[in-house]
Length: 97
Image (cartoon, rainbow, N blue to C red; front, top):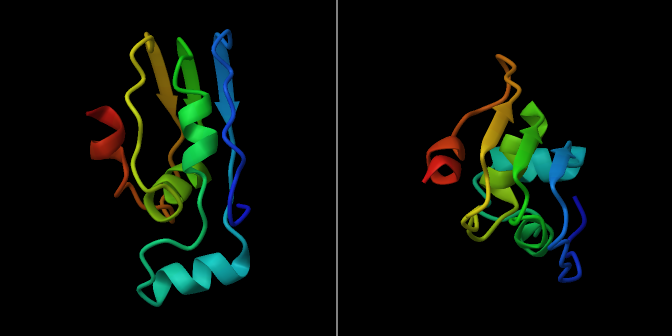
């Protein structure tokens, strides 16, 4: 995850498969109690118009530690979330809201 993403607008995007990962340093910082270790908020806001969204397991961790707030996905009709035993689900309730 970059420290910051430019504000993007993919308003015509229909489907997205997102596989974002934190660096080793960001992962270490998140385990040491840092709240925000990167900022992917602008990127996530830019894809919030998708209808079909597939999130890889690592992306859930990114949403937890690298997004100030998860935007509303008003057009979302299909959500798939990959899971792995070693990746936390802390961001899932916020995403589902």
